[in-house]
Structures are given as C-alpha cells and as structure tokens.
Image (cartoon, rainbow, N blue to C red; front, side):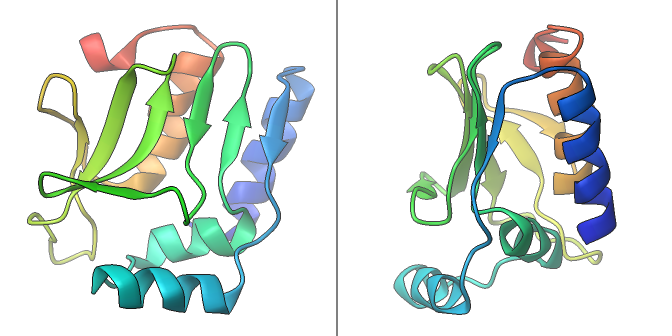
Length: 138
C-alpha cells in the first residue's frame, strides 16, 4: 500500500457520493508520541495510512477508522476501527508476520477478518461502504 493507492480509494469513494471525512495527515510528533506511550512500532502500512490521513469516517453507512490519538489497546489488540458504533476491529499485536503485518480481528466475535491493513481498507471496507455487506459475519 502506498500514497497513490490511498489517493485512488479517496477518488473512488468521492465518485460513489459517499460522505467521507478524511482527516489531515498525521504529524511526525504524533507518531513518536503514540509509539513512545505504547512502546509499539507501527507497521509500514499503518504509517503510510496515517501519513496520508489521521483517520477517516463515513456517516452513512456508519464507519470510523480512528485517528492515531484514538487507537486503543484492548486485551492484546490495537483497536482501530468501529462500524455502527458497536462492531470493533483491532490488530493482533502478537501476530507480527514476516511481511510486517498484524492479523486483523473482529473484536466482538474474536475472529480473524484478514491478514493485512491494505486488504481491510480496500476489500473489507469496500464491502461495507459500497455493498452494505456485514463482512465480519461472513
């Protein structure tokens, strides 16, 4: 995943007339503060995302990817996203693989949703925002 991929998805959602709010880019001091406070290095894909936008949200259908300040440690998971205010998603911090990724879990059901942030952002989010499918139930 790179900045061009993120620009493409932003254009795609704009064409679909979704009311998406993209926050401004995360500043370096925000990365440092998060990593120092949590003693945690963000993966390259996460850093790329936050360098592009410090979170985003959609009002209908409801979805939010948290800003770096809103990320929450939750029983070994780094909670980063919510849908409809009650479906929570998090990175399994114990699952770092060779490709520098964390597995992504649906926190409510404790099930793996996907293995990369790019897959979550481009495939799973698309299922929810465009097709209105509850991908966490598949």
